[in-house]
Image (cartoon, rainbow, N blue to C red; front, side, top):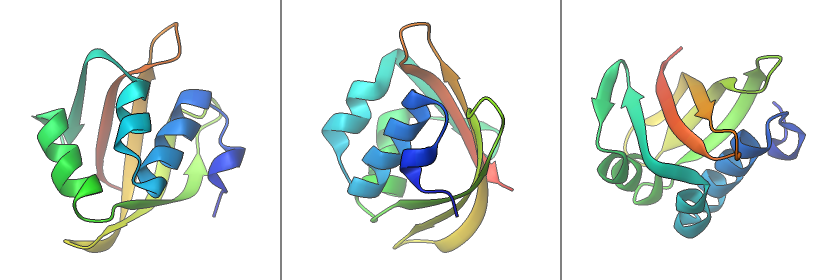
Amino acid sequence: MIDPGQLTDPAVRAFVTAVNAGDREAFHALLAPGATMSDDGSDRDLGQWTDKEVFSSGGHMDVRSQSPDGRELVVGYRNDTWGEMQTAWRFLVTDDGRISRFETGQA
């Protein structure tokens, strides 16, 4: 497992830290205006999805590996609804260091 503090990309590091802390305010501060996301290849409403899959259900990310640029992760993701599953996460980060899109799905 990779400690979130050791993640290469600062925006991704802050994303994982905010998810694991259940910190909605920090999480939303990381997102670029109009940010989008997808789950298993389907675009989802970012606010509804994160509320259900992360914040209301105790979402937690245990990072198992990261790409060289730090913007792709393999994660043991768990929450109170689904238990734990291995997932892949991919992030698009703007020039000013905010996340404009993330994609997740089973790995």
